[in-house]
Length: 162
Image (tube, rainbow, N blue to C red):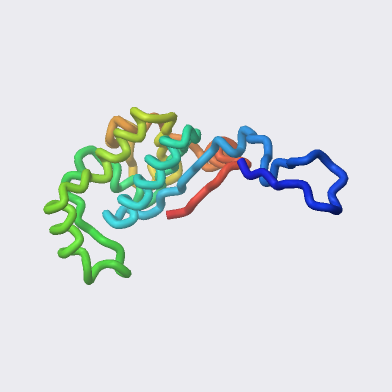
């Protein structure tokens, strides 16, 4: 909390709080639309999820297209695909992650779920498109839902598209 001393022209109290505001329910929400299934973007997304969970945010991870594919059972164990932008560095990045014992993105997500309120949901339209069922996905995915339900859950909070 910042305090500001009274200046000669102030008519208020001798000290005033600066930058104070009331927290709202929306401050507590953090959502990610996970469209990509590449390792570099999955790592970034799960790092953000973990940070938000550690800050006591209510986190919703909405999987669609590549995100759904990345969450197929055991797919995370063999996925080494990087985005086109980062592709030239993929080999070095994967090697350094192994050398430095960087946890897999799925492990980061599971740890975030232990620390805070994190819900992982899959897009119903994408699941239908790929003829997939909830049982085809990792157990961290709690349900299949529609985009309107996700938007309602995320409304007023911070939402990122990755």
